[in-house]
Amino acid sequence: MFDKLLIQKKLPLLLIILLISLSMALFLPAMMTFYIFYPILVISYLIYLKTKQVSLGKILLYGFLIALGTVFTLGFPWIWSFMLFIKIFPTYIVFLITIIIMTLLPIKKLLLGIKIFIFIFLSLVIGLNTNLFFAAKNLIGYDREVNEIFNKTLKLNDKEIIEIKSNNKSIPLKYNKFDFLSFGSNEGCMCGYWTHPLIEKYTIIPYILGIKEIPFSRVVSSDKKIIIDYKEIHEKYNLNIKIIEKNELLSSLSIKDSLPFQGKINNNQAKSLNSFDYRLEYLLRHNIWNAIFYYLRVGKVDNKKIISNFMNKNINTIKREKSWIKSNTDSILIQNSDMSVCTTKADYNYEYYSFNTWAQKDKDYSIKLSPKPDRFIFNNNDITYTTISQSQEFVWHDRISTYKTTKYFFILKTSFKPLRVILWKFNHQGDLLKEIQIKLPKNIKLDGRNWHPISHIEVINNKISFRINNIYEHKNKKNECNYSKVEIEI
Image 1 (spheres, rainbow, N blue to C red):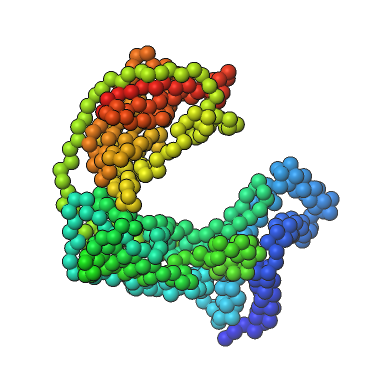
Image 2: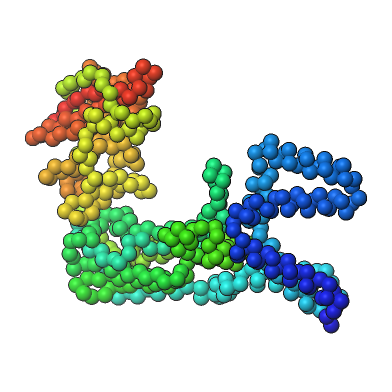
């Protein structure tokens, strides 16, 4: 039986507190909570001291010391209390609603352990709310749909091209469905902002083809195709990947699932801390129960692994044995330049200097390096070729120089211990033809920083020339550079 007296005394007060709390969370301007929460906290503490029969003089002294401490710590207690208030507020609402429901239940005579169990169960249901369905589906293994159809393996000869047709280059690969909207702040601007759940979205198919060293194009037609169809509506998505040869469906993969909250990320109004939609989402999800499920990785999804396995099972390539010439050669010094100003930027991070008064302007973007695994990526006539690391020198390095001729790609980089230059020569299909370890001449002038970037590459007949640049950062040589021009036969 309900304790009517308890309900008459306790329930109205709890409901009033809940109404005020929800109104404050959903409608009160965000900065107002910053301005009022800490003073109310301090005043509440001083009132508490009054109930303990503390003298008025001591209460005024405590109030003065708190105010003085807040000023001398640049408002840190104020900011900290606000951050704590924001972070725990959704959990506080969950617990408050749980207490109100328990007030209505006839559980007064039950054991404490049973009451605790009821409290945890009710707060869990309230805290997860609509995510309760995702949790139930996850436990029985029906939280997402993954279907794979296999008819035949796609077989490719070396350098055969796959055409990629896609309506969306970025597809969700890794996320957690119990991830939640959070709150961040910047003490510099004294402002707050929403932080969205982490969803890794990027292009995965070209990456997998690159690892398998399979050429691909989004422009050049081929009778071997990968068709990617991705649709996303209200945090739900449908991904379909088809492998086709001569209009025949060889295999397909479909994934249907739900994403964590993304919101109107491109809408400035939606980003505002006063946005009702964002506040409601924060109130529903940013609580201890969603956090427990998230950190236990209950809703963690890894589409990258699924797609990679699908591609590796359904595409086979026949590759030629790789061989290349490896040699050593001496270089000839053509010129040691005079010292000159190499940049007008007021920036002492020399690694990222533009060298705008002397460096080569026409950087070739048809060649780039990518790590994990280390590989060169070449683009020739809208076809992308990939060459996985083949030499012990063939490692991730962002300080390379590149050059393209009508027949070849050239890549140069400086290497240390001992200092030398390494040159790689590739054909336009990404095959490594030659690696040359270039010994620098004794009369070359190498000074300044340890890093000596290469620029001004020129290929004439069977010779290649380039500059090795010196960058200075000494007190009397800021922004100054010089170079040595060398030449080798290739």
